[in-house]
Length: 505
Image (cartoon, rainbow, N blue to C red; front, top):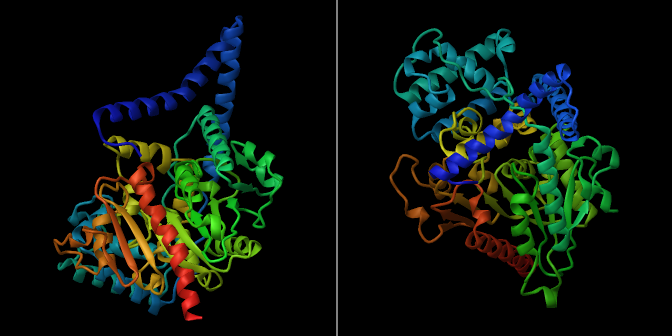
């Protein structure tokens, strides 16, 4: 993630402008060449490239339309569970007016009427869009009245009667916002992926690919797939594997966030795999680094796996390697997978200590993650980078708009109880409200002006907080000090957990 300086702003805006200009210029040159075909070799070569870009745009256009299909919402909780969830969410809202303002895309308070609030909770609690909301039962209408009353109590004022002009942010029913990327961008992604793969292979990892049929459904095609004989036991998940030969330590499962695959994490993984002080006498700690293609800036035929499929396939991978307990390390979107693994019985028992870097799932009922990633109008350099290269990427946008269900992704402190957990937070995170998340995890009143939890790395009852005051989202992986600290924590967890288990035995 780049910074916020003027040179960085000029660089990122110029880069985005250049990429976005490729397609219209290509279309123009193709149209011009119909009337006046080029005769030089260079002109014909340029025309050939422009035809490719134009054809790719046509394909991209129809693919975008197909991805606007409605989301398949999970079965909602029963009414008692929904009301309990609502009460828990209201308990952790530090600024009620800000909460309502951001969920309604910056609308003024008088523009948000009672009917608007009920419509929002019809989506948030019942998974209903506009059409479905018109066919609510009397019991459901009564439930929504209760949520409107609860919101008014939280605000300390009455809601405007009727319906105002405000429009709510409803991720899974709103339009999927995507921007076209030129063909050359995907070639760049393919090159970066190839170099990352070579680096991981050099660092002792082996790719376990999906089937060759699956290979043809991902663009750009992955050259590394053609150079490995190892096949993943999971049909839709590829991963990089370092064999586990240690007799006394736990292996590591790593789940990445939105990025060009493992590119942002390759150096961390390589450093984690080498220079282990105990490897000579005890063997090496195994590592499995999963690859989630729909959030890796690629075009994929298949969408992001749903919660049950994801956990089932990860469990299949762990069992294939005989791993019955792991140290789980995740970054950003990877915390969604972490949440699902912790809430699924067959995988929960395999999760030992946990390291979560820039997690997005704590206090997910607050609007910051959804608003900052999908609705905020970018102003600074890092915001423009996030918006163009991540938020509006075709499959990333589709994943968040059609396969990201907040009520099954939200993670509470109770869900990590019984695990040793380290949470790493950046003070300049442009996605997560890390101040509020840090207070919540430290058990501090969210409205209090208390920053003591940031000092000397807060530790309490198995929960440890790492605070990086000058780090933006994902920047801890870019800094040698941050990677070393995370490596030390992960290695410590791999060693200490087994020792504790042996002591109990």
